[in-house]
Figure 1 (cartoon, rainbow, N blue to C red):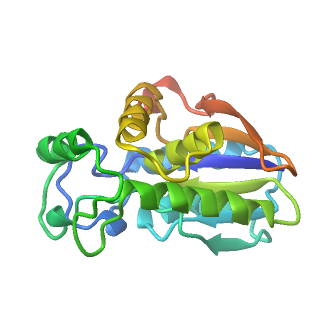
Figure 2 (spheres, rainbow, N blue to C red):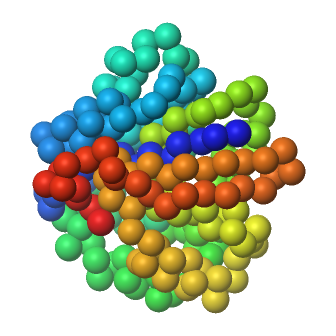
Length: 217
């Protein structure tokens, strides 16, 4: 089965604005243009279009849904990895959050939960594995999944490593993977899943974007 894993378009947080609710962050005008280019680049109608519960994936998918109005749209739990509950409700920028982000990853505790509404690293990998299992239940493809950068990397990590109960060392390795594997806004990862549960993928592509619209790399 062919799956297109698509990172959302540029959000206002990606562009440097302060935000206080991970789920409600909209896309920028440039993000809207990215979404338009993406929709025009999809080669054929998907069998299914999936978005996360987060606003930025729904806004990214809007032009694609308009282009393929007869395709079923479903919301799945493919939202971004949200692990700093202590920042919820506080209006902060990506730069302001960076010290807390670094502290979380240096702690390297896969089972640590920052508070209500936060997810552990082990929980993220379980969610990625559940997503792959659900994909295999789909009758046909391609499936277009509008999701998030960290979640896409978690899905690929789950496929590459098969890790179910990550150790501190594996969590550090994943962090290195995240830092080195660039995934620009609206990048498409072409994932092929076989009946045996294995998968191959092609790195995130942005050939559909003009150079001046490539962000988030």
